[in-house]
Amino acid sequence: MLGAASSSVPVATLGRVTDAGPAAGVGELGAALELGAALRRWAPEGVAVVRVLARHGFGTVESGQLVAGTASGATAGVLYRGALDDAVLPLAAAAVAGPRTQEAHVAEATALDAGLACAGGATLLGHPLPAAPAAALGEALEGGVPAALVSVADGTGALVLTGPELGAAHGTLGAAALDEAAADAARGLLRRGATTTERVTAGDAELLVDLWVPVPSVLVAGAGAIGEALVAQARLLGWGARTETSLEPVRAAVAAFTDADVLVLLDHDPAFDVVLAAALRRGRGFVGALGSRRTQAARRERLLAAGLTEAELARLRGPVGLDLGARTPAETAVSIVAQVVAVRSGRAGTPLAATDGRIGG
Image (tube, rainbow, N blue to C red; front, side, top):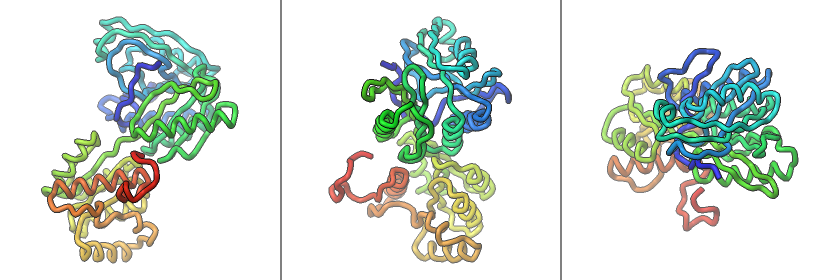
């Protein structure tokens, strides 16, 4: 059994790309972008990944940790804060040629120096990742899209699943029936809504599944009580959240949006139309705007005049939020995050009693 428990954490962990300098100061989303970019860049030349097959000790650690590497020794990502690098980095280069496992042990002092809770050991699995699955996984990590990497426990075969429902499959475990069983297992884990590393059984095969579920990051554009309540509600859910009141910081943030990002525009100033237009044309993330129906209608006319299409405007959630009868800023914040959850899950936000589908995702 893996000791790595599920946890609601952003994609990947803090990483570095050894052929491009350290990623010092990079947040977890930035680390995912770097790891994804490296996978895409290296896919044509041949890339391997190193994953944790089993562990004991170390205390609580994040799931979904991964190191990618090439035969030339370039690596991206990190396992257990780098405490296992002496074993991981050579394994990443060697595994390009074929799957292999390796035991790694970390003494108490080394573990504590790395920021881990205690000493421990791990069974590491290194295996090749073919070009198409590597590129698909890299694109998903860069784009803030849910993704899963599934392999047989001995590293033979690799299947990458991407998309909000893990509907796109890349690669194979060697048999169509096993691929289908693996996809079902990964989608079952996805319903928990958290990044996780699991060992699962599918028929006679034991599989290792790494699943990455991006945590939403909310950008509130504008000041006020609703914005404060929205930031508090987002953080209560474990999401990232921040507030910007000036146009240029909002424009810069939206230009880098992934599918995990959320824009909630509170400011009614028409100057922010350029932000909405850019976000809607980019087609990434959740885009919502507060305001009365009169405000929404005026905004819509301005955006149409600016050249947006009906299809692009259809992505704008305005007035943002579900119809919960919210009266206070805190209740309005609940209605907004509820809509974000529903959209990310592909649900309509209707009462559970009025539906006959799966409860809880």
